[in-house]
Length: 100
Length: 170
Image (cartoon, rainbow over all chains, first blue to last red; front, side, top):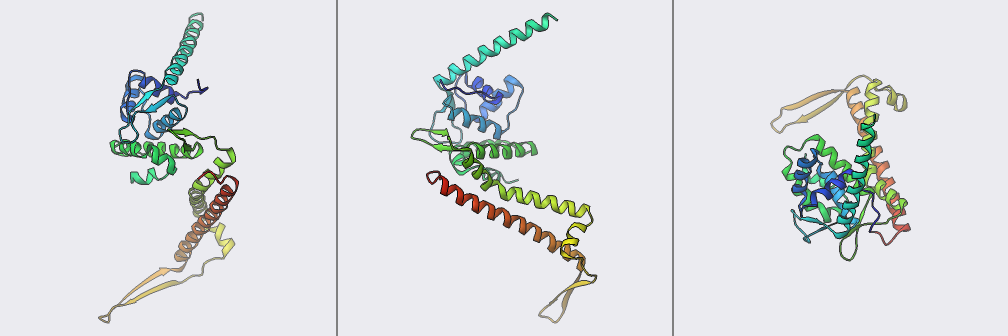
């Protein structure tokens, strides 16, 4: 698996693609719905380019204005690992806060 | 602002790969707010700093050297930086009451520049422009021209150095 450190934007894109392929605009809408954060088009496509370059997502069409993207097997594996890590972090943080 | 102009800020390889999609996204952004424009400018800078290169199957992040990336960035952004620097100099100059540049190139004399245009029917059109204002205008255009020339020379040198060091990168 490629050793890639994910930015928050990249993680949001991977989460958005976890339930199926989406094109850029659909990702933008979905991310806003899930996280309340609206990614600008420059930020969105910058992150898409990096994820595609790292082999974590792939385009389903050669060309087109509404080209859908999907997770690759490496992307799915990476997202799982990232979410597990976040889960551990969340649990540790919650435990420590409860102990105060 | 024209959306195509914003897209032109991105590297050509990037536009070939994602330009059509980004253009469609921008069409959906109405009105084009200043936050989106800033996001695109930042994205374009990022795209220059992390160039794409076509491999056999897909576009992948290239492994260009830091020097090549720096040269490419300088090549593309130096004219923008020059215009920005010239604008700042003009602002400083206005703030200081033109004293900065007058000391360097001389103070304007008093008087007027006369512009006369004779029409075919025998009448004429005459305008008087205060000399010091025309002098200021010419001075600021000269500053801009010097800044742009410097940037273009810098870009040309960077381009030459880039071609000499890594001829395979186009």
